[in-house]
Image (cartoon, rainbow, N blue to C red):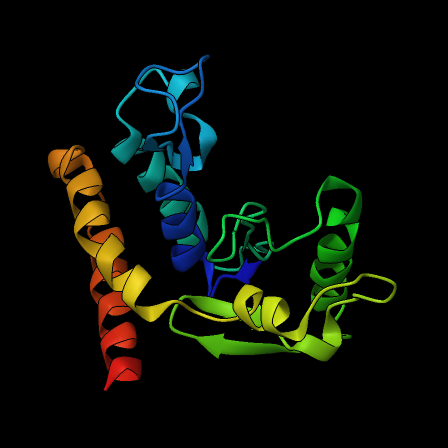
Length: 182
């Protein structure tokens, strides 16, 4: 679970959403495909224009904008086992999100966004090893650096319709990751 740094960063997170294809989606089952804001099958115009619309909303003076969160329920350990226990426990993540919105819990700034502090994520009654929690709340810097070319390739599909702010977000993400790597 990641809280965006702000509206433009949240739009970037939404614009880079990806998932594995299933039998219901075009492509080979299990391949990763980008599905911006999970809207690709439903958007009848260039997604770059869709992203620009979101950035325009965020640029309005006095706009009262919600926080944006990005959740990956499907992170796995080195053996392919899911780190998070599953749908029955997802409300614990939502609890952290709501408490963040209310200013009751903390977050740690990382290169990819704001992550929960371990003590603020309710894991009472779960049998989650500390190593799994650390991985869930950690940043795989090398993995994210490996994603940068894929994100750039994805954005290239939108040509001149892609808002420049999203290209800047990729550059800033890469810079933050490289600083941590040093």
